[in-house]
Each structure stands twice: as structure tokens, then as C-alpha cells.
Image 1 (tube, rainbow, N blue to C red):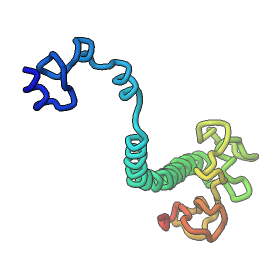
Image 2: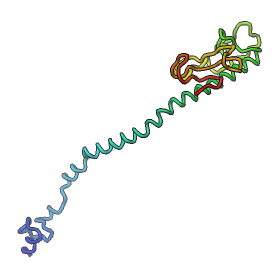
Image 3: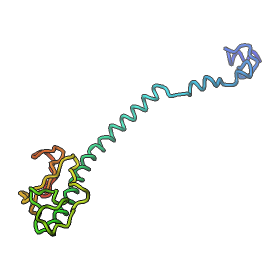
Length: 173
């Protein structure tokens, strides 16, 4: 049998086991080596995961970036609609819209000489700011609106004539 072993396992000449092990101890895998090999990820595996995450981020992030700006525009349009409703209620109670000088603050605090004022017409203690942190613009009588007043936000630019103005006369983006 020793001759057969040397042919089958030339590196194990003189072993007494048919499988080529010198003793039963050689048959037990070295658990210390197995633990060391399986203790963590290789650098290649980590880099592969990072590349996959970067590709996913490159695909997904641009989809959500535009959503934030779209949500701000929608909120501004909703605010303008709510303020318009409050202005219409003010007009029903008082017979006219607030003047430009009285401004939107007239929806929160009673202007002088308004005995039929039944406000506040907006919730909260102040007129809301637009989503970009600027006050809504109000002008009465209006130059553009057929409703009798102009109500608008300058949009992301924050100044007159900038791109993306949101208005109550239908020229919003």
C-alpha cells in the first residue's frame, strides 16, 4: 500500500493513511487560519461595494434634487392660493382689499377704520414667508391680476425680474 500512496501522493511518501494524512490531527482543519481568512472583507470586496454605492447614488440623487425645488414652487403656489382666499374673505367683510400700504399684515392685525374686520384671516401670528425665506409681495390695486390685487413671490432669485416668479395672475412656472 505504501507504493500506491507514493504514486497517488508523491509528496506524502511514507504515510500510513490512504488519504495522505500522517495523523488524525492533520485531518482537522486549522480553525485559527479559517477564522483569520473569514474575519473581514478583502480590499477588493470593499472597493466593489463602494463602486456599486457610488453608481446607485449617481443614478438616484439627481432624481431627488429636482424634487426639492419643485416642492418649494408647489408650496409657494399653495401659499398664494391660501392668502388669496384670506384676501377674498377680508374683502367680503370690509368691502375692499387691503391697500398696498396696509399690506398682507392687515390679514393678521386690524387696520385702522375697519369696523367690520373679523380677522385674523390667516392662521398664526404673522404672514408666512415664501419657501425661499422672502416675504410675499402684495400690491393693490394690482397691475396684472384681474382679481384686483397682485400677489406673488420672487421665487428662488429673491428679487424682481428674476427667473421663476410665482404669481396669482397665472404666469407662474
